[in-house]
Length: 612
Ligand code: NDP
Image 1 (tube, helix red, strand yellow):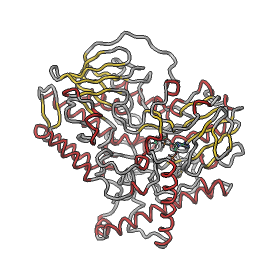
Image 2 (cartoon, protein in one colour):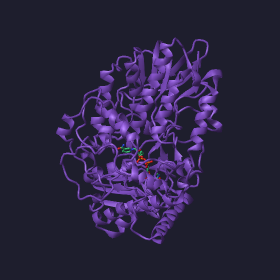
Image 3 (cartoon, helix red, strand yellow):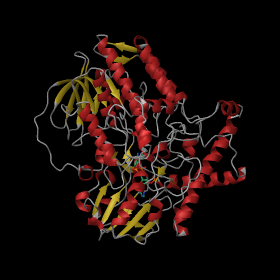
Image 4 (cartoon, helix red, strand yellow):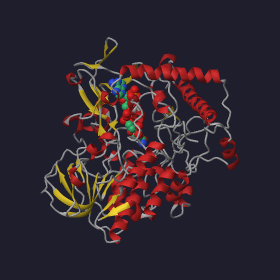
């Protein structure tokens, strides 16, 4: 069912966000009871697409053409970006105080490297299973990860908050609105840390630099940039999936004489909390991805003039946010959030009769029909732009010409109207992007755009395990060295030769549009495995060779089932258009399969793991 729909070949239509039919104007603040976790699939191939095949083929030709333009401009793939953006752009604007402390040299039952949702969830679940000494280590000055760092104006989640924010049931909290705002989510992260007593041993403003296994003592030696030399029985590598800011490699960037920063380090000291510091400023934003879509309207309303430098437009769907329906919230029964997750795992809703009918379709026919429905979806996105954006030329270049979900779909009701403002100029670079910046600002097509402020909304390094950190397992082999001929893991979580080490949010795990669905599943699995190991008197657990080989085979088997990756416009979903990377990507079996495989391994621990 999901073969042509999304991230790296496959992805069920699972976010609860895809709105099947065009709805009316946003409803203001009407209450919003969450839709059931299993939406009816608007991409059901039994539903006839209204146009001729020739019509869809022509649109696909345009998709291919737009992709080729972009690939030609950036043949270097992921190397087009700078991943070490420098201290100045990476420094923490939220915590100017640098806390002085003595280095630690103590022993923990578990260390979580990172205090975002991954680290918090793993720590919370291990705490529930009886671990007492758990330390979170984070570069930030508090927990929260993404929600600690990203505080730009307009920040909010773009998946339903009742599913996105974890541990709601446990903490007896129901989010205020359908799409929670950043500060509410960050506060929830802090609440998790308080409720599970995770602050007590946490260390902040600290970067783990070494994680080395001691096979004799069966412990991990963990060292940091603060001179700490700690040990731990278990280590959870929870450094996040999109946590390291990246910049496009643009000639002359360092010459710019105005003020610049990356979206994940939003500089309120410069702009003022209410952005009033921008009122006499000419601002430029490079990038139009999910982050920029949230920021642009807010900055436009506050600054003198805004230039938006666009390389590829985002697909902007209806947001239609609203406060949580209090009656629905009052009616929730214990276990409600887990039930939603389990229900979501089954995929989009299709009746038994429809399943039978779909199974009768030849594979190519099914794919063809789904593609056509995908195209219809994108045309609906185009029509909305035409309806909202007054200047036809601007409307035209805001249209995304790629298949649904080649890039992360966004949901926003104020982004498009922003382009009707007199103080906003869209600089569409037609796939080329900004390639030159001088003292005054970006230069495109011979025009120099003089700016006071330049905001980089150019995204993050993707799913990089162990950033800043040198991870060495049995025999001293560094983890990336082990991966050099292809990643080798079990569930993306274990890697053989790295006992008692668990990786969260990395490759070879399932990908979910709502990332926390996956993180919750991993955290529960990790905590169960740790509990089993401890309760059975073992000091270490490591997958067998066979188990690792089985998972690598399973990942490879489920990848490249269609050529969707090659068809998509470049972006981080398809490794910026690099050739299919076989085992170095996500597990494209279903989320339910991923979960079931975990249950199977937990039921046969001695068969699948070596214990020490
Ligand atoms: P992205 O990587 O998605 O977007 C980067 C943007 O910068 C793209 O539009 C890219 O264009 C553009 N760009 C890069 N180089 C240049 C250049 N030289 N000139 C012009 N444009 C350029 O990063 P984001 O920070 O927007 O989003 C990253 C992810 O963060 C999202 O996909 C999402 O997963 C997450 N996110 C989640 C939110 C949520 O609510 N849950 C909200 C915001 C972000 P091109 O497309 O051509 O590469």
